[in-house]
Length: 254
Length: 295
Ligand SMILES: Nc1ncnc2c1ncn2[C@@H]1O[C@H](COP(=O)(O)OP(=O)(O)OP(=O)(O)O)[C@@H](O)[C@H]1O
Ligand SMILES: [Mg+2]
Image (cartoon, rainbow over all chains, first blue to last red; front, side, top):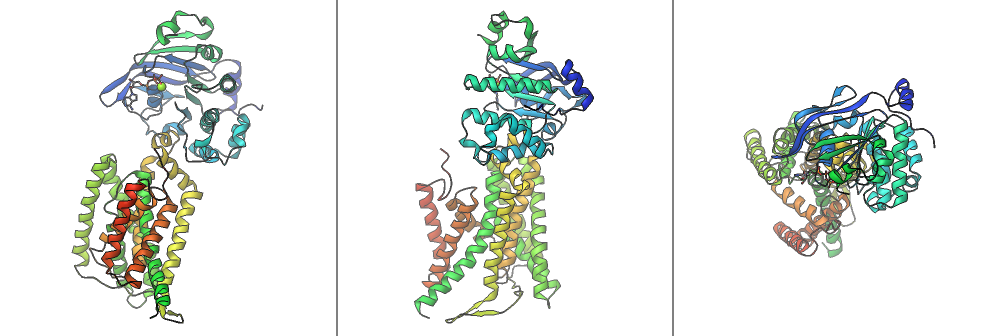
């Protein structure tokens, strides 16, 4: 498999392969919610180049809301989000992905009536990427190449998830946000997603992965953040945790 | 006239009605499909197109062809501009809430009518057709301009289809229609898509009016019928399906042609029949004849 072309300049790429690079995304004490309902209460985190940060937490803890807030899809009532040194939380929502933030939403949210090729095209248009990126993404997911003209609504669940990830990779993202990509998938598909995340990590992409499965989290994460009541309650190095660590019991309930 | 030729005449007349109606209704269908805005002022965009075409025709009273060609370019652009302003200044500020936009577009309807009354006056005014040749059939002569209207509408509808189905702009519009939040998360400026869609929808109504005004005079109250018929067509065809809109427009146009030309019913009768058809469709196939069942 050819290496994924990094979305960042060459020099930093080489360093990213050796060790984790500079902080790519910094979320500082953000508050946000829906109308009068406050969901995020001073949430703070950071992810570096080539790092995978796993977020875990109970249903309703605010994980998806955090991703919406990073994308600018809901307004912040406090705090800020910085991407690669630039404040992005004051930008209109459609400018955030153009800066290099790729989103794989919970439940995939493909453009269901559009074909596989058209879904990818929407992703490519975000940052003006072309045939090179498209080809690379299709090399990562050959099954999509066989189904380019298929209406995406009719794909199997696993194929839909591949397409959701492929669509986000069409941005050549600096930061990739994955919201429960393994939800409802069989083990071989989960393994494929895990390998994809690992490969991306090697190319310097900063990844936030929201994940409910302890084994998946432990196998790809550099650090695991536990979200509770709209804030990151604790962050731990993945290497320092085992599947029986008390944090999983406390914050995820498994 | 024998019934055979009369039927042919009725079909021709019906096709002219259908062609103009299809253009107007596709405009309404686009704004509803993509923005979920029920644009009650759509007929007034049609009226504005017709009235503007009359003004353009007054600049060149001796050159109807030049005036017509100019009107085909200027009128849809001006009306689209007005629509974009209405979108940005009014609809966007209402957050496209369904009830609020209906009330707002009713307001626009009266504003446009009164503006037309003030600047254009209460009288119906004819616009000279760009050319006058008649096509002589064995049984009767038929207006060459009406045949041109059918052709022009066909070409314009083809262009709309190409825009939606084959261009990047169309892809962006379709993605926005399906899921505007996810569209935003992929860099699509939804506000701009909406303004553009509202402009294109209004521009289509205006261009339909430019085509129709040499056949039917311009009048400040002429927007009512196209609005009613466009709604009928959009409901019959199924919301957001271009193909359904076209087929329904053809159906309604031919119904109108047959009933009023071949069977000499008063024109209102065709409208009553069409409305009845809509009621039946709403009862038995609420997603429209060609719409996809969503439930
Ligand atoms: N559109 C919305 N409007 C109002 N409240 C919402 C909306 N979306 C989410 N919420 C509320 O915000 C809170 C956090 O929801 P969120 O989707 O961020 O949770 P989550 O951590 O992603 O949960 P899950 O693990 O189930 O996906 C919940 O209480 C939810 O009910
Ligand atoms: Mg969630």
